[in-house]
Amino acid sequence: MLPPWLWFYLIACLPVGVPGLIRDWIRQATDYWGLMTDSPVGVARTAGIVLGVASITQLFPVLVLLGAMASLLLPASRGRRVERRHDLRVSDNPVIEEIAAFVRRQDPSIAITFSESTRMLARVYPVGWRKARIAVFLPLTVLWRADREAAEAVLLHEIAHRRQRDQHVVGLASPFTWLVRVWGPIFVLAGLLPITLYATFGGAAGRLLIGQLLVLAAVVPRMLLMPVMALWLAELSADRLAVRECSANALIRALDRERALPRGRLRRAGGLLTHPPIGLRRKVAEGRFHGLTGLAVAWPATLVVRLVLVSAVALPAFMLIGEDAGAAIAHVFRSIADGLAFDRLILAGSTVLLVVWPWSVRTRHDDRRNAQFIPYAMAAVLPLALYSASFLGNVPAG
Image (tube, rainbow, N blue to C red; front, side, top):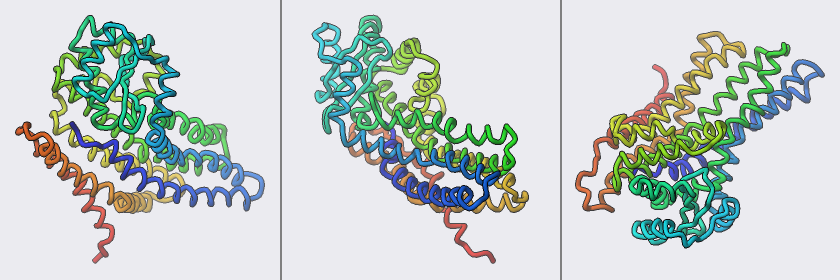
């Protein structure tokens, strides 16, 4: 299974990133408040109000962190809420008993509950610090009779989440995943839309606000890419157990059955923030994208993509607020250097985890002599290079 990037994000990335985000927001909010209070009624005050309202959405990562803490601190309460919401109960249905027997053979600590809902196949959820249950829904009982191996692949995927302790963060009624899904729409409605409307309808400070709009838009890739990739890799890691214990074809058949479940377009679109597209999961199960090497590189590659996207947005933003091209480019490079310096702990932690993880897996599973070290070593080069580059901005010229 892959390194626990979801837990790494919660333990290292959020505590490091959120304080800096709060400091940036306080600085910006002070500037916007000055526009609203010190400027005469008119263009500047209106611009300050629009920017002040939009900037509040930058604090959403703080809510994501609080959602993660709520997921961890109240597992029993969350479990009761899940069972009430989905009408989950213990069932003496022969199919459920067969499913429960299969799950017990894999992990005796997991119990099974059943719902007649048709929106899902199965989902894991916590009911205590060390207890978890898998909610089995009606379509999985049908699949159990029609394609037993595919149904087992679904259950093994949920069991893998339990082995990684993911059920405390993901799964049914997770505040963390819910906040990640709604962050984008809220940012668009409360952040981007007011500025866009102001500029579209001829606001006198439209050019300035469009520059600020791009600055605000950079917050999305900077803060949203990492939790999304952490969630995607948790799902792909769980898929690997299903492929190993059953087969790639069994998992692919299960994914095809999941794709056929009735869901609205908005629900499917929101689900892409917490689950990889089914087409991508099929290809990964088939061993494409260079197999383990591609999966090992995915996390450090996300750090690079985030840096590139933020830089691409920052350049036109600086030019729109009045800087010439040369000054804007220099400003972008300073921002990159500052961003790398700020991310040193994340970059160093990512490097160490990539190096240590295959040795840890081999220690815990001595029978697996074919543990692959090269893919992780290759992946570790990228965050190590970025970590080294973060010190270049401190080297005095000449």
